[in-house]
Each structure stands twice: as structure tokens, then as C-alpha cells.
Length: 90
Image (tube, rainbow, N blue to C red; front, side, top):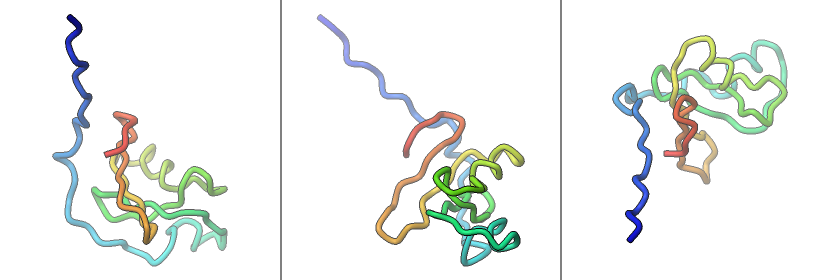
């Protein structure tokens, strides 16, 4: 008999805070007058960055710079979050 696989869990949920977007678009793209594809909100500090499909990849750059691991989509029809460290959707 095979035992069911244990589902991995994100180990960083304790860092999530009640945050609000600090800007109406990607902070870095706005400053650099660049365009973005999709927006991501850092669930630790409220930083708004662009997705990895965007030229700047500023949401990931924010993670690399700060270590803040969890982002959520800021797209109107999406409600998912993602942990960069555990590489999993939440």
C-alpha cells in the first residue's frame, strides 16, 4: 500500500502583512518610463512590481533585493499568491 504524498506548505506565511499598493503601477517602471505586462504586490511591504514577462522583472528584483518572499497578483481577475523561496503558488 502506498501512502499519500504529503503536500508541501509555504513556510513564509507568517511574514504576510495587511498591505496596500504603494503606487498605481510598477514603481520602477513608472520611474524609468517603461511598460509592464502584469503587476505583482509584495505581501510584506506593499511594493508594486512588474511580472517576469515584463522587460524589467521588477517584482522578482524586489525579492532579490529585500528577501520578501511572497507576492500576489494585482490583476483584477486573479487572486493567487506566490512564494519565491518555496517556488509555489498559494
